[in-house]
Length: 172
Image (cartoon, rainbow, N blue to C red; front, side, top):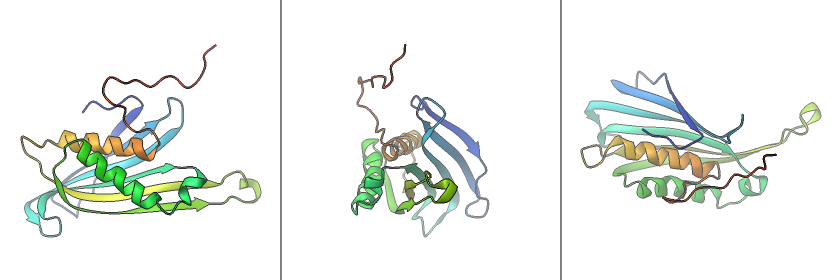
């Protein structure tokens, strides 16, 4: 998989009791410096015998989170918009999938005392879906959709082909 600039992944331990076979990665979309704009995990589960609750033999599970502006976290439409980031990412990448499930959580934490400047607003998506994986529908499309979701949550959606972003800082 060729990841977008600023996006890094590492293989991590995967659940052993949910399915006979699994692999997991964690990802981070960085800002070009030391700060992560979004973080997430993606797990591919496989049970050759099938799983009735998945309606298939494969299941993808993700957890994605990012800090957002306070105005955003208090918007009652945020959960619906965040869910659309997920479904749109799958559609945009041509992913064949069914049995979509998930939650969107918007949270705000207020700092006090020595942590008075530590106010924090976050959005978190926990999603799972059953992918169709075959010659016409490769896993890489789902990986690309996950990467797009990480960008949307971070406020850095993917750019159309042939479009480049301009640098945001001055060098001098």
